[in-house]
Length: 520
Ligand SMILES: Nc1nc2c(c(=O)[nH]1)N[C@H]1C(S)=C(S)[C@@H](COP(=O)(O)O)O[C@H]1N2
Ligand SMILES: [Mo]
Image (cartoon, rainbow, N blue to C red):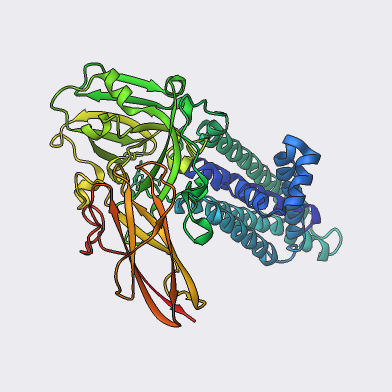
């Protein structure tokens, strides 16, 4: 096959693969575009000095430079893949497969993309393979015609020449078709993706001006050097629980909230409206009803938003209303007791910010609910779009039909973070540390029992507020061997967490966290 046709075959297969991947990504989340995902992974994997150099050299064009550089490298690789496939399609097929795997891995390892995101690199891979094999076959057909022509005695067969031209034309028509198709698919993906580009919308929001900031978290609020979590959970580490396979993409500009049902005035709020109200910031610990005793589904953030009670007062909640039935853009629903939402002491928020940033997409951008003291599934609707004030009988929220309780206040609990289960620690003085929480009440004390011995009080971290977790620690002298530690929290109402074990269904696990470890 002529070198030109071979190179063109490689390049067009690449174009088809990237364009198809980009188009499918417009539907499953533009971050799944193999081109962008590889680019994003490249950014993450680039050593800091190189990154700094790129930013210094290219300024705000650093990403354009990266994507351009990637394009050059990929086109060169595609040309080579085409050239080494002049006899057989196998080498090029292998190169495309490798590209496909790289794209797939890049998409798979991107944070905040669901499994469906893999459809994009998969579609790209299939398109690349199909185009490559098809154009390759077309190009080879032209060649076999030329071959016949060359071995035929001169002047013996003049009809070969038209056949050769016809095959060449067929290849060129096919190649143009692929180029056009790839162009349309790529552009279509780009336009569709931009139209739904929630991350772009989020980036454009800028700083949220908070009228009433949360008090700074004091130094002694955590024992992170002893193994507890940091008091404020960084957004990227904040636990995530939801039913969304693909993170819903809502641009702030397109968002609105309808508040209706048993109200005097139906409200419709948009993002600009919400943002222009006096914003408050509250430090709140959120946790999930699916958290096992000792489990990880608990985190703390500074949430920024407007008072839910203010919005409800504006709408005028009618007597007899029992639940706030909220719905997210992806159809998930949640029922929150009206008293909890109206209770100003509790301080529920329509949150638009988290740890000084606009909400991250996976935590509900543009707007979510946060109600201190209630498990997330009855209070913390992400990607919120509708609140209906109604009765318990009129509406049933998502998890109710799946065995979970209608009302689910957070249970007083505690967890051991250090030592870890089955950890080997050096003998002598051993530090045991962990967290405890009793939202809306506050932690009064945490005790531990070592090897079934007496309960011993632990030192508590500086309290931040009653809606947040509190850290605890104690030093114990232990002989070498196996040891067991159990913890229990008592809240400010005087209640000590029960040792009765109950599973997470229907309204949250109970029991006491126990850790076995070894002193060596
Ligand atoms: N739209 C939507 N909101 C949701 C959920 C969901 O599945 N969909 N899950 C809820 C549950 S069960 C919890 S525990 C919290 C978790 O919030 P996070 O992912 O920001 O930590 O979100 C709540 N809000
Ligand atoms: Mo949850």
